[in-house]
Image (cartoon, rainbow, N blue to C red; front, side):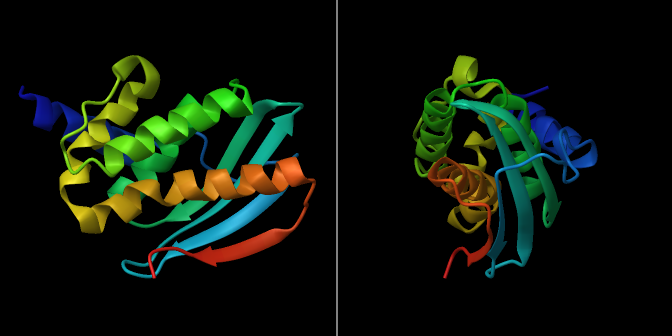
Length: 156
């Protein structure tokens, strides 16, 4: 099996068997993000325990890339400090904006390396980043002490 086929399998597996899906309580912030370009949507909640990501829960609709990316985000961030999680976000974002020229660090991104090929298709990058930008937004709100639901459209 070649590397691209293996990466496609990882994405397909996360799409068919999403980790962490379903909205849960408690949470400090909830956001709803939409990619108007393709119609992908995610409602994401973040629960912090001090400076640690205690839980991320989400309800999402959309393509396999956006759904699988949210599943990978769930696998990677809970249990980390917010600072550590932001570094993972930065690493994923760098790969997504690298147009296939950035080699992902498997130790940092684990299954997230499967999205390296997606970076070659600019229209799909927004799909892969939808859940990550929602997490960043929700985490910022939680840290600010906000307990509001905010809706954002991405990709305009």
